[in-house]
Length: 377
Image (cartoon, rainbow, N blue to C red):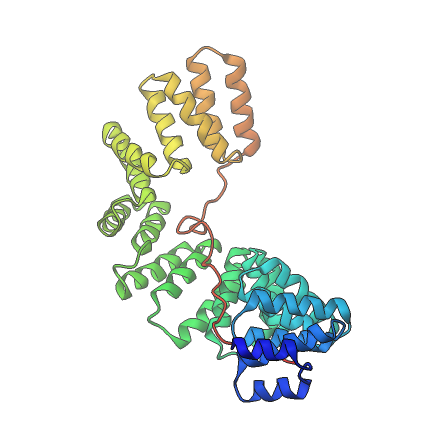
């Protein structure tokens, strides 16, 4: 290979026809060298930089390809198809923000380009801009009903945009292709829970547990739904099953602690809650229950600290403010007590909590496909 680079450096630059011939023969490294020689000979040749980008992208050298495409666009902003290729090269690197910028330009130039629209939707998903992802992905997915991967990303986008009806439609379609997908049953359950159709959500999680009893978080999700509907004995069983799979599942420990506290078993509750807290200090239910238990035990300093943390974790939840009001009243600070009770009354009721975000803090990362045929000269 070194001799070829030396040859191109010393001799007259190859012609575009020579470079394309090497490319057609599958000699991509040699073709790349040829295009580099052409661009060195004529740094103003936008098409040569674009062609270099295509060859580099076919070798999966996406960073170099993106640089070549940007040079081509700088020389000729109207060069057709380069924004799409640039967007794809950035997307392949997981650079979703620059990919989005390039793909928006590609779509503006050709609104009928479904490739640009699909990639833009996927890039928005990668940026965690889920509502926007739905806007771009939904029409493309409707035109390609057999593309399960695309429908799955659309379903996740709908779910995390809290467009539960859209998510439900997509998950139902996915289940028609694979009725034994535990993951899809779980996601369907999350969408149903978001629509307050909790009994149906329970049914989906029960199915997932039958299909894949060892899948992480299935038993926690089912236990949470039982807990939510005050079926505490059944919830306890599911949380315990989750802990058999993952002894460090902080949420299962937290909700077991809450059940113990609801059953007036304060010491057992504290044991579960402390175990959960040692794993994950971000769970509001742990801070709230610890505060309530410490308040009952008249350990006011610990109660105040725990309840303050519960408020910090979720300022819009009324229950922590109510407990703080009780604490300040016990301490004799009537003004502070009234202030907290007023906050609780202003919030009126506990904000509705759903499974979304409990099983995972965000949807799965996007894995760009390894191969594509979108690169074009």
